[in-house]
Image 1 (spheres, rainbow, N blue to C red):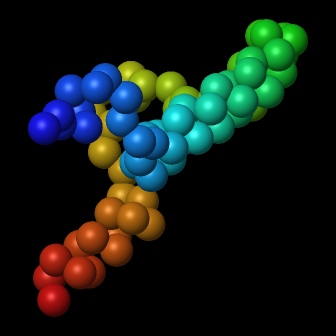
Image 2: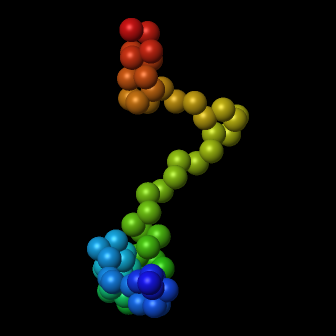
Length: 77
């Protein structure tokens, strides 16, 4: 008797098919986005990024923003 695995050829599995399809899809997505990333000028990338607030002169930096108020409200309940 011979094992079917000893012959060296194995039937295709669904897991292998989906793994290959996922890899191919990721490669296609990367190739389609790459030219757009290369052609983008640096000024456009900098303009798209939000400007950070300057650091406070006296240190600290705590500000009572909306999400902090919401946290205090949920923490006290």
